[in-house]
Length: 256
Image (cartoon, rainbow, N blue to C red):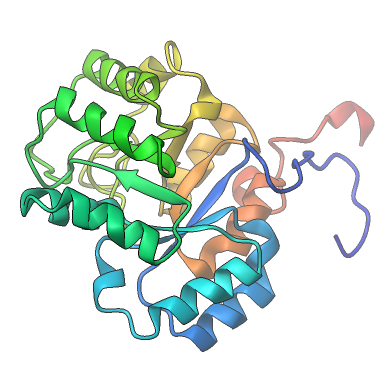
């Protein structure tokens, strides 16, 4: 930090297991990646190349190398996994992970119908190859999953070998954990937290109000994902109580 302030939440250093920030790269140029890392890299724990953008990204290997040189791991979005699965190309997907030297992979079923035992088997198989992030929730706004089922799905995927589970919201933040308006399904979130440890969940929260909700509920070191590159530093200030939304949240008034 550039100067000293009292009563600022402590943030663990990287690599960290909590207070995890996942940024979404939806098609940055390699020059933009370099600028992004220069400005915000120390606050980014992992980068997702959104949905199947890696299929059409120019100079993909070079982009991945820039992130790797900065010590920031990357992974391909879960929609790419689903695109391979629906075409019966799972072995080809595994070869792609090897070809690009990927250390992480996302398993999801937000766009396809996949029996849950089969999904868990994919988690198990990929866990022998990479670190698996497993996403729960549908991209279909009409598909409402009850809380007990979210809990059951998350726990089964963790048991199958997922390192963390991701709560689905899309890059827009209006499905899954959220209503179409972007409002948090707070009852769902709090029900999940009665059974699943908060450090095992990455909550997709692309909108500021959503980030504020999770930070006020679980503290500065909640795991958040689908953060736009230009929102990384704003998010860090929210985590530290240095933006109006959380300005008083971490202060002990007796010591002011």
